[in-house]
Image (tube, rainbow, N blue to C red; front, side):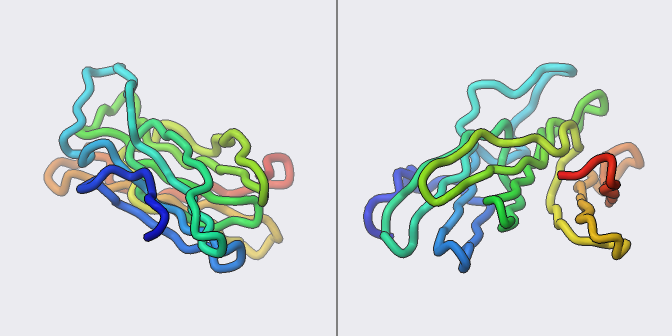
Length: 168
């Protein structure tokens, strides 16, 4: 990729997305693999270098980046920009998961601060937005990875139904 991306060599790159409509490339970069990040109960992640980078494919240049709380695993192009799902931390902290889904609202000239949609999910691995019940409102489906051993490890699929009173 030319010019230089600004992403350090040998980085942990868990996600990418090409937005064909806007000719943008999004690259998710983690500061370390999620299994290596451990926190004490109730301790929030801090000093993160987990990021999502935006690149202009038509102009062949980096645009900007957004720092997120934990590793960005799930990226979805949206009419307003980008929807990002972040993993959270491991081992699972049952009090608080730290996984998030947020919108990085963008236009062609500037980046706007993110808008939080979901916060505190355990080990989020994927999300998708779709009108599941054909009511004209987009709902959010989120999956979280369990530990595969114990019943309380956090693995699940959740649907967040959008209602007329709560629209995104």
